[in-house]
Length: 281
Image 1 (cartoon, helix red, strand yellow):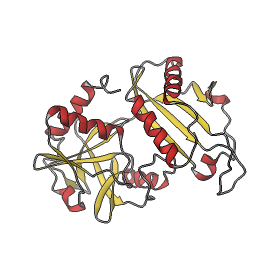
Image 2 (image 1 turned 90 degrees about the vertical axis):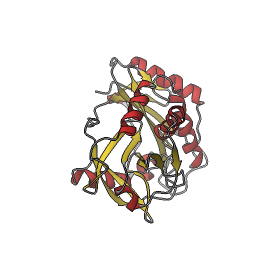
Image 3 (image 1 turned 180 degrees about the vertical axis):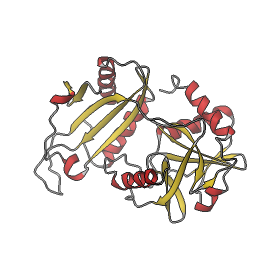
């Protein structure tokens, strides 16, 4: 259960927060966000997430009024106010603020910044792996921005749920981009492959850390375009995000991947990731 919310510089009980009806985040999805795993009261890679939030904010011409140091301090205090010491999720959202409804945003408007800490409840079968489906990538062309405008992602995720799958893998012009809420990796002939960062791919923090782990562990990798047909022939596939960490995918579109079990390299990277949770700033 959520207790306190950070709202524009104040810490307020959850039930007392009032969001204006004309907040542009509500009217136009005019805002950006971040989701951060908190392990035992310690936010993981907080600095990296806040820097990405700032980049997303600047990309949509949304003033970022706090320094990342000030925002980090506020996040740490919100976590300290929480009584739960287990794993939680820190959600941060920045919108352009409240103004009379118009497609043109005002020259002067106060952004609304809020943060919420909530329990981590996602149950994932890491031992046996998960299933995925492929769907057309119907999102806008600036997916590198972590925008709160997520309706295409929501519909893709819902389609996966209806078909008994964990995630939808998005395909654009015959090539993999990413999952509805994750980055995509596969092992082909012993080499780890992931799509290169383009305007259609979010630069995932966990994605970045996985590549850093590959460098540490001398695992060969390539950032390269991956065709739809290559997925079904992969030795291993896994997905990454802050909330799911590294999840093995054992079946895509009802086709078994590799042996149909979590792959050796995937398990190795997942273990290395969890062992290094306290290392990455």
